Image (tube, rainbow, N blue to C red; front, side, top):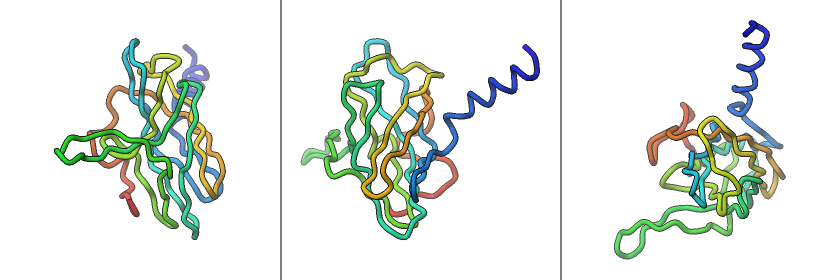
Length: 160
């Protein structure tokens, strides 16, 4: 493989990891969990960063990798059993702050997968915010990116 070809392939591989933005909202560290060939659902995680002076809110998500995409979180029931539920009002992203979507917490749920989520692929997501509008994100698919409930990258989560 020539140096030019290697460089081009490297840039293409890095492209999904670059932050996506619209208005005052940036999406950092997006990734999706790899699934088995028989899986019917998957999930995507990321950090939503608001550099603006006005609060915003992630209100919807869409992807061609799933029949339905919902915003979900985990809550503990009366017996201490964790349950996953849809968050119809969406996720707040405070002014000059961030909101982390992570394993074991808030996340984008992909229901009725139209294909398996395979290590090395990417999942295209369209995120809709109340103020910023839509942000297009390509989330690389990986088996393991972070521990459940852990921090993403080096940016501390603010306003969660």
